[in-house]
Figure (spheres, rainbow, N blue to C red):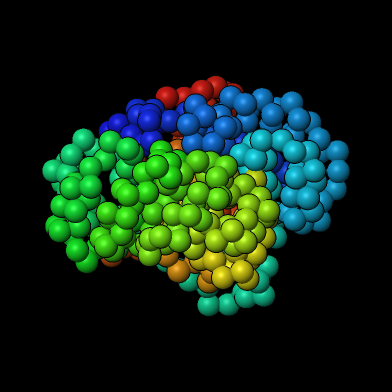
Length: 364
């Protein structure tokens, strides 16, 4: 997938985004779609696309047809027992949820809400936000923020690193004092940088996401104890144990929940419920998904647990061409949830041809 413009976060800049889409077909002709959301290189978490594809081909798919599963939760318990890469497991489990929904003639959203005992009056739209990559100075950042506000995004996430100047963030907030805004550090800082975060503590950011290392809970707790801005943890939230570490160590107030990062929908539901029970706030993050992953996120983010707008951007935000027939647009900060059985999206004609011929395609 070719990006419309370079997307820079942490210490790397992406111009293309390799994506693998998984298709599972049952004996009735129903098709379930899943997305491998790992990046090409291990600069977010350790898992990468090639590793996930290898695990799917050699460890997960050969065993998929050897057992009977009455629900996606049963499949999730089985796949969790394999201890494979979480993003590989998530891709297969997502396809199973989509397939199970279609076999039962319900939407994925309806299936999700049935797990919490609610089947009526489901939301048709969810409030969403947009993430903006790192720019060289405040002028460029302000220009990009204004472009996204003009597109009706009501919540902005700014990617920053150790090269970001406090004065730039001050200038940004001066221009946009009332815009719901947060910053995402992608583990680029350490406790030695605590004065940086103390200096921006009065800028009214909704939260500071993942300032420190991917496995750290202790230093996050130290930082949270000296600033009032809520800390959100992302990269180091992989299991339920990690959620409890946030709570027990007082490492932050928010958890960014990503279906792919935690190994699938079932795990994400369980971990979200655990976080809420322990007084943590949870919101739905994004991974520069295609329309397949975006459809999953929209349904997931529509659950009543989520009060903060998720990272679920419009189809035309990042890619020149998406792989689904359906496109996603923003209307006053909200995005409609696809209707129909399953996740409600189909592959585009070009993507379907690639599947039929078992070949890579370059959408650019």
